[in-house]
Image (cartoon, rainbow, N blue to C red; front, side, top):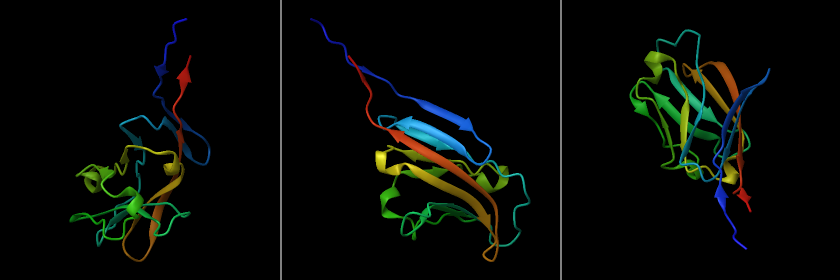
Length: 135
């Protein structure tokens, strides 16, 4: 009897009324958490924040005018996140997450701040699925 093992990598993005849902298998090299901002970028101290409220520290990725600020980043994401270098110019705040793991599943919040007020919050739910074998 011959057995075939098939690895399936899925990237599925759907838009629900309240949040975007991204589904991916953990074998994926990377995934994109989408966040397009349509408001006005603050003139002073604009900071794009990706957070997860169920973690401590909550910061997944911070981007300031000068570039990434990863000093307060949750260690779980160290070396695995990135944003476009021109994110603040293009208002494309999407986050790339490399080597997704089952524990990365959760609700991520993308927002922008001027240091005083947060605006443009958007939630993205990430569902990382385990290895799928078809025998």
